[in-house]
Length: 197
Image (cartoon, rainbow, N blue to C red; front, side, top):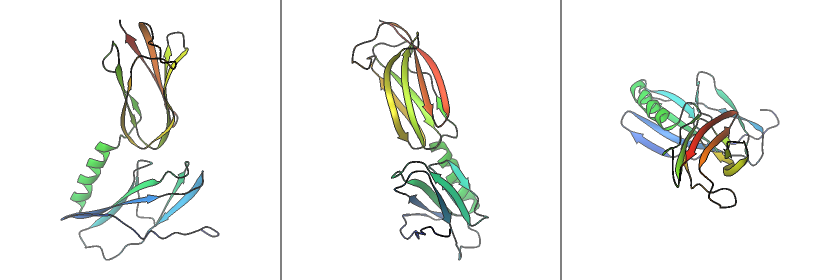
């Protein structure tokens, strides 16, 4: 764009296969909240090949019928990750299916396991795109007991965290019902769990 720096992408990492190829690409900036423009031009592809780009960080399949993709980077010094794929239609379909197994398509908070528990339990959650994540445990009165994750940037993926039944002062909590809450990119979810002694 006019008045902006244009940086050509010149280094790639090639994973080859007999029916196609893929590259991982990172775009990083040292500024918050800027708009980025990804442009492409490709030619000399074999006639049976197609080409696609997947924005892994924002969990989006990019339409390559246009010649530009506009995306925001909210967090400086945190690269946006892309996967560029070229290959037969069958190859691309297979790779996209595998990619979508690895990258959750929605935000989820699962029931802790075990539940009830003593002395510890595991909380699992899915992050569908890069997010600032908070996970906090409250007692039944709504008072904060333990901050498990505070303002931690997560890439898309499946995560778990162990709670050992201690509060923020490293004191074991009493038996009873507790609520765990996740906040991530506008996603907000609570679930109940029980400690037995």
